[in-house]
Amino acid sequence: MFLTSLVAIGPWQILLIVVVVLFLFGGKRISEFMGGFGKGIKEFKKELKDDNEADEESNSK
Image (cartoon, rainbow, N blue to C red; front, side, top):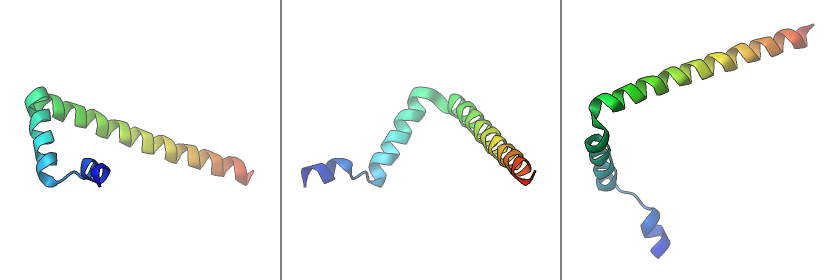
């Protein structure tokens, strides 16, 4: 019972974490980080797609 109460995170705890992160880093830094994170994901997906296409071309020969 004690372990499950430590793992359970409710909406108030999430809100508190968000407020603390905003206070520590500020909105500008967080938006820059998220923009870079989004670009990284786009590049990763693009590379996966290119790699899959290259594998299909080599398998068809």
